[in-house]
Image (cartoon, rainbow over all chains, first blue to last red; front, side, top):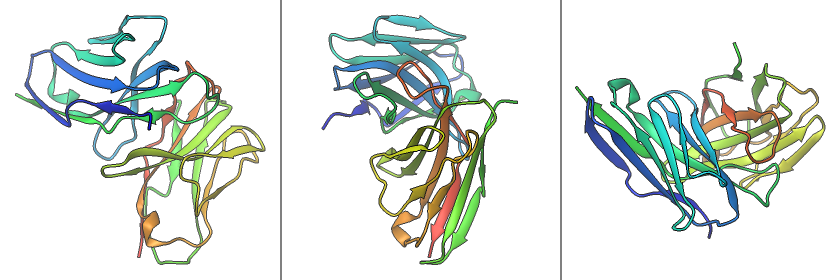
Length: 114
Length: 114
C-alpha cells in the first residue's frame, strides 16, 4: 500500500552536530508534507512543512528538503541540542483526498548526547 | 494560548464500561480529528470532522463514535471498550481539512482497558 516511511528508526548524534532525518514516500499524489517532533508524554508538535511545488524550506535551525523525483523528504537540524532529543515523524496529505488523515511514517528517535 | 486540550490524560477502566474522551480547541478550527498511536503501527486516524455536524470515518473507526455539536469540541466515545482499544489517543485540529494545513495535536490520552 501507499505509505510514508523513515529510513532509520534511531539516530544518535553529539551536541553541536548537524542531524539529518530521512523519509521516503510512495504516493506521488501527495502535495503537502509535514515534519513533527514528539517528546515523551506529549503530542506531536509541528516543526515545519513544505508543499510539493517547493524543493526546500528553512525555519529556525531546521531545513526540509523535498526530492519529488525519488519521493524523498529530509529534515536537517543544525547545531543539534539535547532538547532536540525526541521522535521525529514525517507525514503527508495526499492531494486527492480532501479532509482526510495525515499519513504518518513510523518515526525516527533522535538521541543527542552532550 | 492556542491549544488542543484532551481529558482525561490517563484512564484505566474495564471492558464494557462506556467512556468518553473529550477534546476541545480554542483556535476556531473547522477540522478536528482523532488518532490512536500504537507501537509499530504509528498514528492512525479514527474519525474526523470537517465542521459542525459533519463527521466521517478514518482508517480505524470500529468500536468508536464521535460527535461534533459545537465547533470547539469533538468527543471520542467508546460505547463498549475492549482490551484491543488500549492505546494512546490524540486529538488534532486545523483551520480546514484541506492540504497545506498543519494539524495541531493535544498531549494525548492513555487508555488502558482491562
